[in-house]
Length: 235
Image (tube, rainbow, N blue to C red):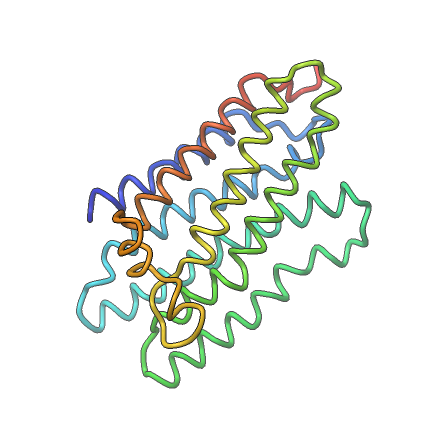
C-alpha cells in the first residue's frame, strides 16, 4: 500500500514540475496565465496523498494528520476549481464575481469540518468526503472544460497534435472527477455509503489509489505533449 500511495503522488509532482518549467504568462492562450494554479493543485494534491499514508497513526498524532490530510485535499481542489473558473470567466466573458465561487464553496466545507470535529472530538472522514463532493467534482469538470474551450484556438495554429494534447488533458481531468470526486472513503451517508474505496476495489479488483495514479499519469502525459509543442510565448 505504501508503494501505491507513492505511485499516486508521483504523477502530480511531475505535473507541477512540468508546468513550473514551461509556464509563460505572456501567451495568446489565456489559460497559460493561470497555470500556476494548476501547479499549486498538483503539488498540494501529491502532498495530500503522502500525508494519507500516515493516517493509521494513533491519537493525538492521528488527529493532526487527519486535519492536514483534509486541509491539503480541500486546498488542492480549491486551486483546481479556481483555475477552471478563471479560464471559463475569461472564455465566456462572464462577470468577475464568478471568481469568488471557490471561496464560497470552501465556506460550507469549513463548517462541515468544524462540525465533524466538535461532534466527534476529532477530525473524521467527512472533511475528505465533502472536499471531494463540494470542490473536487466541479474543479475537475471545469478544468476539463477549460482545456476543451481552447481547442478552436489551438486548431488555428495548424498543429493537430496541440488539439489532441488538450483533448487528452481535458479527458483526463473529466475522468479524474469521477475517480477522485465521486469515489470517496466510506461514510454512513449516500453516496459515500455505496460509491467508496471498498466497493471500487471489490468491483474492479484494484485499489482506487492505483486507478487514480494511472489517471494522473495520463494527465501528466497530456500536459507534457501540450507544453513541448505549444508556443507559450506566441513566437
